[in-house]
Amino acid sequence: MTSRIELAVSIPQTFPGRPVDPGFIRKYLERAEALGFHSAWVVEQIVGAIPSLEPVELLTYAAAVTSRIRLGPAVLLTALRDPVHTAKSLTTLDHLSGGRLMIGVGLGGQPAVYPAYGLKAERRAERFAEGLEVMKRLWTEPRVTFEGQFFKLANLPQEPKPVQKPHPPIWVGGHSRAALRRTVQFGAAWHPINRSPEELRIGREELARLSLARGRAAPPVITLRNDVRVVQAGESVPKSTHGGRVIAGEPARLVEQIAELAECGVEHLVLEFLSADGPELDKQMAVFAERVRPKLA
Image (cartoon, rainbow, N blue to C red; front, side):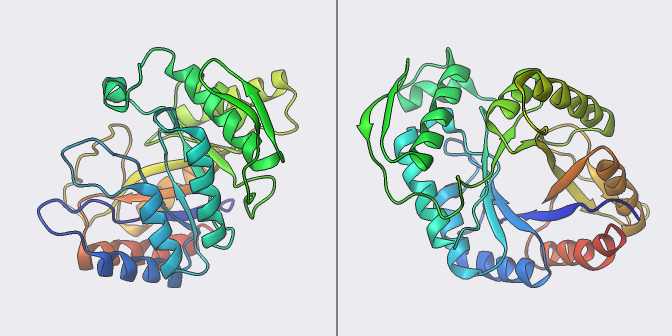
């Protein structure tokens, strides 16, 4: 037994070699909610050869077919988005979901796509930070006046405000020291991908140091998105597209690996099921809900 860690799932979002199947997405989400998962997450990949659904629209569909499970993007590439419109879209989603939205944000790792959006990749970190500041102020202030290097607002109102106060929780993605600084500045949680226990321990220490220096009452929560796979003895583990550590094994081994993450301070784990679709995806999800999670509570 170990300290509590909430398990979440990724929402089916890519459909390579076959038509997009809304019915499959709905059944998967209903199953995830029935199994008691904490939340369900999407990613953002607007440009690319893999057929991937847009995250905010997909989360809106997810909100319509569920009633309890929390929902979020992990992560939105907000430096590529206009913050005024993004703030409105996310507020709308928070209302339509009944206050179930969580917001993951990050820079992403493909600066070469910026010209396709009419933007330059230079100073994207500054644009990211300024955009987040604009969104948070739109969510919390009656009227916003803001004079930035990228965005300028003059006594601008935006209503309604989000259901959640002061706004939905923000998870900041990335694993660099700069990402940790952005997390302490803007986030309720740090949200890296496929990090080892040692990397998480180092990150936790750095978050504590940065939070103390910034005068935060408490450091951000540690969350993690990780590729996972239930495997039987002798079965090979598929490779991750993200690199880093894959959580894999029979249920007892999965419990050990996730317990180690909890000891490193991880409070939320988003499960990214490797090479699973249809009935196999449902089976993988059920194993975590029925044979892994009870041993972690």
